Image (cartoon, rainbow, N blue to C red; front, side):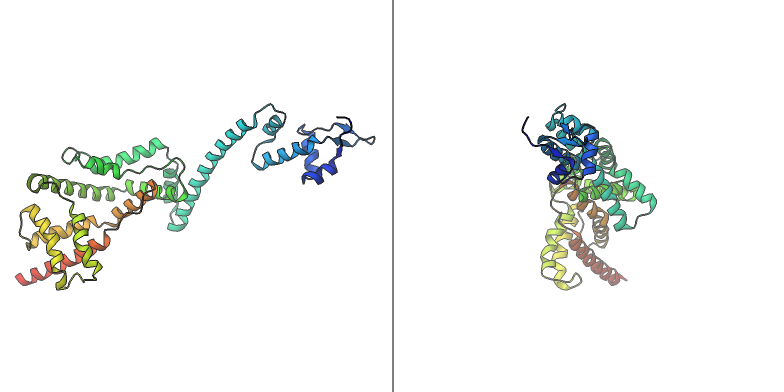
Length: 321
């Protein structure tokens, strides 16, 4: 409009904080255009150039390319639509960066070999369907064929299923990678399968003889908790009532005397398998991936119980010789 002030490139630079070189660059590409020229041929810009350049600078800082910016400032494209599309693209980039960060953090913390690093990278990049197939394969190897005998295993499988959220944080991604590695470990699969088979056999016996009862690990946890809290040593005579309590539950299941040496050896081996650190690690990682509270560790109670059983089994064996 006639009478509106006109600005030189130098004045625009002072008002916008951009350099003269940057403004000239934008002007040459038609993003901001002069409305007049001085007698010497220098470009002059209208008052709307200040707001236009402020918008251009904001959009550039947000990562938009110049072609898109020109269409926005010329109103060929809707700014909300462009912003939404760009936000979606950034979300994908953030996800990729989060995966890379998780893998690199794991490599740095664990001192991984190049082969392990490659595996972790592949696991981190699995699609949702690929993750689901990996988990289903693991749970199928562990519980396959046992569901019919123990219907409760359907719920157990569900409780052991990792569900990585759509926008996981770095800790969840790193936990997923380690959990997936565990799931692929043949020795770990075999160990968990053996535990499932033993639990299934015990549950069938309970259903047929005593009715539904808790798993032996839960029994031990509850029976031994007070002994741990009281600081009772597993080898002391004060531990006898606690050992007798959880041993009696197992002995009743198999219709054996509480003090049967072979039964105690069998129970010791059973508790040692339950106390596999890899099993507890799986449950810890599962809680991180799924955003659940950290699970209670059974290790203290199981360690105490195994020590207590070994002492008494060794003493009984020595007394027979």
